[in-house]
Image (tube, rainbow, N blue to C red; front, side, top):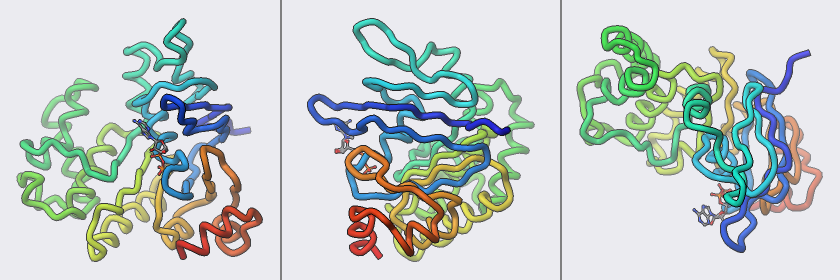
Length: 255
Ligand code: ADP
């Protein structure tokens, strides 16, 4: 029986008086493609950031690939596990952000090779060979020596995807990766993600407002509202026959 690669159990996340995640639980199976949808502010990005250990949490358990991500540290509450452990965990999870976050003064090739060389001790020739394969995969091998400022938004985002893949993660997180792009650049990024989804067995979690893409991409759609998963199911069911009123209202507004 395969075990979930991600187990999220009863997570509570607060910012001061604001409860952002309110006892959220979900499991993700290896290789699953998940779309997280729901109104702005419902906690979708927060759950991705928690998986990247970019946040602390107020309660609950998270296990990735059999290891706890957070542990109790006295009065500080639940904090990310120790650095060495985290280092190992972070290599398992890659994240692509809305705003690319490329290193602006480094060329495309260096953006992709930097993390494998620094964190995995991979030698430059090998890191560059792998980076060129990835850049080829995202259609940007000819831009290897360009700096980010010379690229379009869609191209920057494809570099960001190649960079995240360079660490060979088991899990990829995509946080509204097309929402900062001009409409004509969205498709080129979605095409790369479609290929990744169909050609690899990576586990993928996607936060998106592109409902058409979520429908085609995901094995399972989770509808978030006010820090909880209100409804989940196969894309065909969620988009055609949502059972919860909050899902119905959201989809009526957005589609
Ligand atoms: P979504 O991705 O569903 O739009 P988020 O996870 O980004 O929602 O945000 C959930 C809530 O947490 C929002 O109300 C947001 O304003 C709040 N929030 C996010 N980050 C912070 C922060 N660093 N400090 C305070 N509030 C935050």
